[in-house]
Length: 330
Image (cartoon, rainbow, N blue to C red; front, side, top):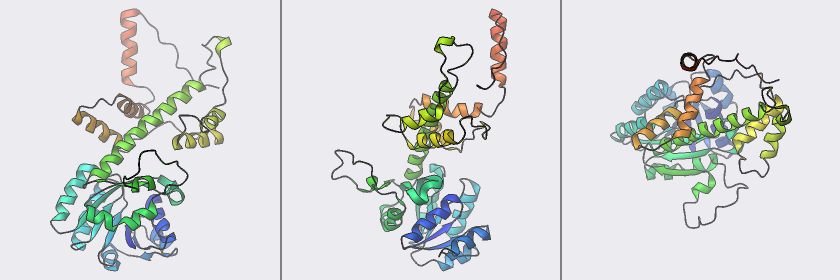
């Protein structure tokens, strides 16, 4: 099956490579000519512009947009809407806000153009492992694109089957689902990323406690000098807290247990904020996910004004003097 890909970064480029390996064909476009040349050398058809890209696709045309969420994706989808025809399909595989998907689908439906949103998880490992996909859009369009999704998905692999799933949609076991109408795919991916924030924060805090188990203010008999790399490794094997995130943690600690190559400044890519907004709209308590998001905000400040004000208040009502800041553990 043929797919057009716009945006040949780490995920967009590897999606094309995975499709080519399975016998699909691809037309590729990126603002960086070198990225286009690299994929063309591996068997893809190069396009020099969006107009050239649309002209080289076979009807019914499918254009996958793999660009950062926001203005660049908005502009590209709008431009494609003017170049494609009825029964063609636009896929947004980035991390767009699901309400934007609902609006785009409605606008494109007037022209008879299908719009499919694909929440895509797999990162830089997707080429080999496959991509977990959460898909929103009309059933007709999603079913037609199934050969693409089936190739990109990781497959059932060695993961044991879940008891009681007989007779249910087999695609979930393969690593992709049709979540619902336009917007549903990115909504599910948004919550996925919000949960990811919480899981990552739990690991980070737990290992921080382990790291400071030999702090000088702890009685000597209860100090432990722990090997964090070995702890991460043993937890990967049979523990209930094992996960791919723990695999990545173990790999990082094996390379540099002190993590001196990292600043500790943690960005958020938007999905965490959108998840909390959805929780507020639905009146659903999300205390862990909220805390994880706020902790990312805190990571960007060496000294918080709020923390200083807390110290001032404690000194004012109780005469409490704050001790010097504790440096990093040895």
